[in-house]
Image 1 (cartoon, rainbow, N blue to C red):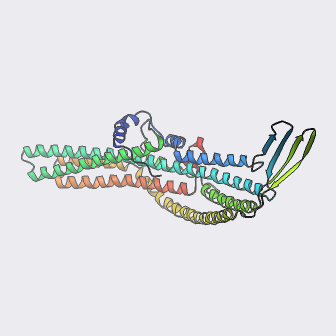
Image 2 (image 1 turned 135 degrees about the vertical axis):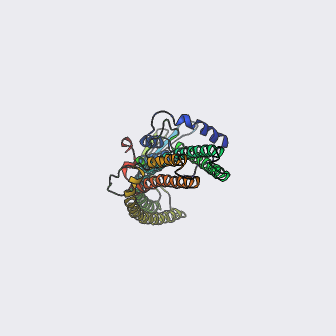
Image 3 (image 1 turned 120 degrees about the vertical axis):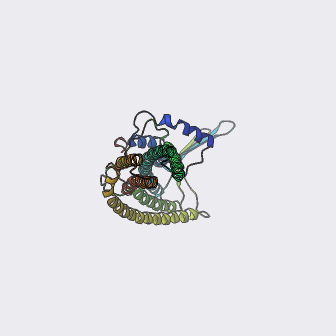
Length: 400
């Protein structure tokens, strides 16, 4: 869902409070999902629609209209009358209305389920992106520190006549590049954390360091996705609505009884009322509900085709991505840090000249970025597959 733009002052204040918000105990991905589900406007809206549909079913459970009571008396009080009537459908309108209501309830409940799973997948993706962004900032800071140390070493060598002005210019340019990368990583980290905060409201602790933990192990669920269930239920609701509209071409019959007292005479008897469908035979509603049924059927067929393609494609991508998950979790980042330390030591010891040291540093940084990007790609491939199959593992244990 598109987020409204926040005032600049609010964003600035939020950024100032991020270090405090993210300090403290570890904030797990399940905690983030639970928090998001409890405060999501989309989830609340879907739940409200389901409650409204249930209320409509209860409202239509017996009769479609309330009874009507009327009473009158003359000024002298010698004549009084009263009448009670109950409008009743004798054409099956009530039965069709309740059938449509039940289908609408099923569609609303399924939509609520799909909304919760979708929000859970989005939060997991935002949580993983925040972890990756934090790692990227840390690595950028380490790279900047390395270049600062190299620049200090070059300055000492130049003072001793062992380095040239060109070496100093190169290392200063490299330091500017590293500083720019670090500040850019900081901004991306803040943006990623703000996106997570938009879901959960607050992040009361630090995030664990493994982004792959955001994507749970699939449980291989069986059955239709809830959005498909909702689409088919909307088709049935539209079909029942059309049957109701046709039945309503003949208005409700008002059955009742009356009592009348005129002086000493008392009259009691049944009453019946019926509108004559001379001008209005419910043509507009019949045509409208017929069109709604056609649209609902087309949407259900389209969604079914999309869901089948999503399941096939995401399963293939998740399968192809999985073997590379180990590259993002087997210590390659630790190896990169060790390589950067060796670059600095090699230059100080005279084993590397400055251009070679800068080139190796650039290659190591590219490799670190690739490791983090790989982790993000594996996580997203897993999450796309879990959402395509509507795997309940996306939800925390207590929220399923």
